[in-house]
Length: 77
Image (cartoon, rainbow, N blue to C red):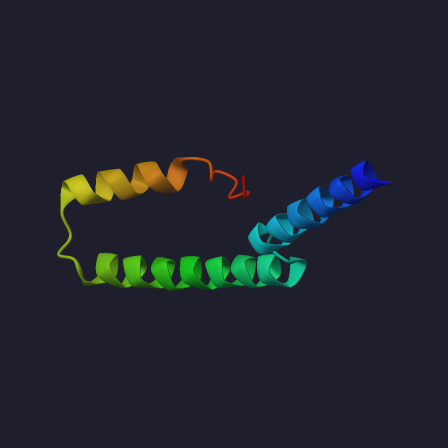
């Protein structure tokens, strides 16, 4: 009977460690929403900076290249 109790205690302690380090579905949803909001704020800030810049040929060339490039997927990996 003792080996079963020992095994049960090890399983319980492993489960406690796992739950301490895991992330809940709600927290993952919150992190995803927060990241999307941050990306939107960053895009607005960058576009504001670009709009306030003095036009320069090299900047226009870079921005045209960025606009023509395909958008990469922003998946969480």
